[in-house]
Structure formats: C-alpha cells, structure tokens
Length: 447
Image (cartoon, rainbow, N blue to C red; front, top):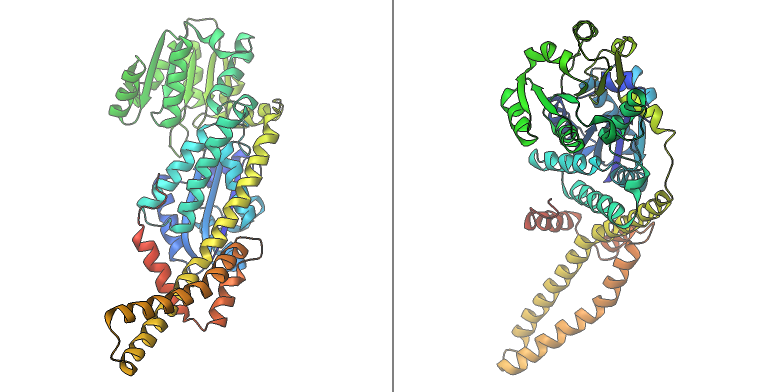
C-alpha cells in the first residue's frame, strides 16, 4: 500500500473554484467512508481549511487511486469532474509526505508561517480516528506532521515569515483604512462585530480583545455558542437575525461561518452605511470559504472588504524570512526519516513470521529428540534446548538486523518479498502477524 493525496488549494485554484468545492462537515464524513469503501483505498483522511481541500488515502494502485479519489472529490463537492480536474494536484509516496509536512510547517499556506494549520491537521487526524478511517499509515503520517510543524515553529523563526490569516487580514484593514502598518494601533477603541463562533471566529475575537476594541458583539446561528464566545472575550451575543441592526454600529466586521450561501449581503451593508453616524469606513474581514460577504460590498463607498482572495494577493508580496530555508531543510530531513521508518516497519511482520517459523522448527526437532533420547535428565534436556535455540538465534540475528537496515533505505521495500520467497513464508501468516500487531496497539500514535 502507498500514500496518495489528491487535492486543490489556493496555489492551484481560484477562490471561486475553492468556494464551489468546499465541503460541509457531514459531506466530509461521507467522503471518508466512501473512500475506504472504494477498491483502491484502505485508509482515508480529509484535510479541509479555508484555502485547501485534500483527500489522503493509502492505496494499492496509483492510477486507479488517482481516478477514484478525483471522482469522489468531484461527487461530494458537486463540481463536475471535468471542471474540477484542471485544478487538482496529485502527490504520491514520499512527495505526498513532503507535501503534508510542508503544509504543517506553514510553507504552503496563503500567509507563509501561519500556525493555525497545526490545529487543522490535528482535527483531521481526530476525525479520521473517530470515523475509523485512519489506520496505521495515516495515524503515523499525521502524528509525525504535527511533530514536524511544532518543531519548525519552535526551532526556527518561521512565525516571523508570516502571520495567521486573521492577523494578516486585520493588518490589511488597518493599512487600507487607517494608514497604519499594524492593526493594534488602529483598532483600539473601535466597535467590532464577529459573525460566527467557530475556531477562526474565536481567534479573531481574542485578537480583537487583545487589541483593545471598545466592544465585541458576536452573532451566530446557534445562540449558545455565540454566548460562550462573547463571555470569553467580555462581549455580548446576539442572534443572527439581529445582524442588520448591529452593522451600522460596527467599525470592524469579521465573518467566518460554515454557511454555504452569503451571510452579509451588499444591500444589508448599503443600508447600514446610510444609517451609520461614524464618518470612518466599515472594515470587513471575510475569512470564510465559501465567502460570507457579497464581493459587491468592496465597491460600496464607506466600506472596505478584505477576503481570502485579497489576502492571497497581498501575501504574495510579503517578505520571506531566511528561516524558511531552515524549515525546508527540516522538512526534507523529516521526510527521509519517515520514509525509512515506514520501510523498516513494513518488513517487521515478515521478520516476526520468520522467527516464528524458526521457533516452530526448534520445538518440532526438540520433540523429536525427546522421542529418540527419552533418558535425558532435566539438566541435560535444558542444556540441549538452550543450545539449539542459541544456534538458531545466532543464525538469524545478523540477517534480520541487516535486512531491517536495508529495508529502511530507498528501494528497500522488496526485501520483505525476498525473505518470504527465500524462506517460503506463508503470506497469510505474515498478514496475520501484521493484523495482530495493529490490534495489540489500538491507540498507537493518537494525539
């Protein structure tokens, strides 16, 4: 089996296509189960963020896997395959590992170095575990990706190479409306409206609170969630029906809901601008995918809109820190180490099966010796048994240690097959060893 990823992101597709292909939570879960039910795939995980949709799978056939995963992505995103295909990218085996590790470090983010992706990768792994679609390979892969991402942020200054989408977006508003470089110096004393109560909205609300805004209002379809977030940041909660009434009083509006349609219409903003008493424009930051705010809002006098598309354009001009090169070296080293560990692990069931076969042969021969030489006393029988076992262990030790070393090198995957052929090991017995090993460690690698 081999790792395959098929996906699209801000690097391969325009925002309009990412919006069309966005997956709701329930659709994501259906995609997981249909992927593992498909013939080429044994495991599956779906990584979705505001600017990427990626399907990871452990497949036994490359071409069949690409075709199946592409078809499933198209079916669940409800974008015709012929329209989606030009925007899809494919990574396989080590390149797929390299891609995920780069994503975990923030190298592939719209804003280089942003750290929110680590939490999103953790969520992806948790869903795969809860739905029982992430097996040994994807558990190992995503756990290692989390470690690599954390290592990059702790050992380098990748955080200085860019900011989170939230802080970067806020800074874009501050520069456009206030003529200042940083959000904090502009936001102090302003009134803010947060639309949505998920993780991104929570991050935005906390950023606003730290910046010293005078008031934070949280609107959400589920009022209890709005109330919890509002209480956490010292604000107040309103229902989504109150959105139009709150807009005229807001200086900053942040939106990130999971809605599939627009939440903030141009007409609603236009009416809010007419009844607004403040002279400064309303700054709107839309972090949703698909977007919450009608793009026409950006053309209204008195409103300035920053969304993922404008953030992506601005982020291309952001300076790259020298630490990015250090992170790339970390990723390359971690990919090599992960590949070596996976190849070595691949041969372990075969080595265990070989030693089990040897132990069975020893037991058979000792039983035969017992029949031929029945008069051995306990001390003599123990000495013979120990000698035979020691000889077999010494004969197998060097070859099994060496074959594990060789299997960890590039191109070493064939050593397991060679062992099975040379020693005539039953493939079903090897598979049984592998299954038993997985059963023995059900929580291995969990976050």
